[in-house]
Length: 167
Image 1 (cartoon, one colour):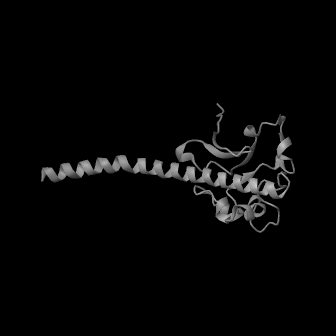
Image 2 (cartoon, rainbow, N blue to C red):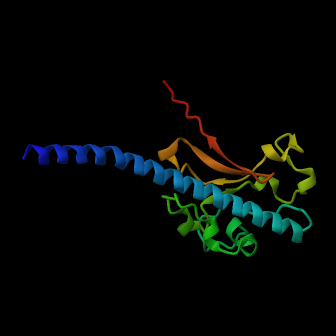
C-alpha cells in the first residue's frame, strides 16, 4: 500500500511540473507561428512591390469589421500571400481575425511611399527600424509582455512593451 501511495505522489509531482511547462511550450509555439505568418506577409508584400513599382500599398491601419469596404491588409495582399489564414495569428484570443479579417495592424504612415525612399517620423533610409505590420495586441502574454513586428527590411522581431504604473 505504501508503494502505491509513493508512486501516486511521484506521478502527482511530475504532472504538477509538466503542466505549466507544457503551457509555456504551447504559448511559445503560437508566438513563433505568429511571427512566421508575419514573415509570410512580408514575402507577399515583396511580391506586391514587384507588381506595383516598388511602392507601398495605400491601406487603412485596421477595419472595424470584415463588411467594411476599405482597402486593408487582408484584402490588398490576399492574392500575394495566397491564403486568408495567413492574416490570423494562432494566439489571437480576441477574435480579431474573425471580426476584422486580420490579427495584424498595418502602419498606414508608409502608404504610397517608394521602398527606396522610405520615411517615417524623421527616420529615412533605415528600413530595419521602420515597422510595417504588427500584432493588434499582446497575444503572447504567456511568454512575456510584447508584440511581434514586421519591419520594412523583412525581419520580424518581438518588441517588448513597457507599462508605466502611476503611483
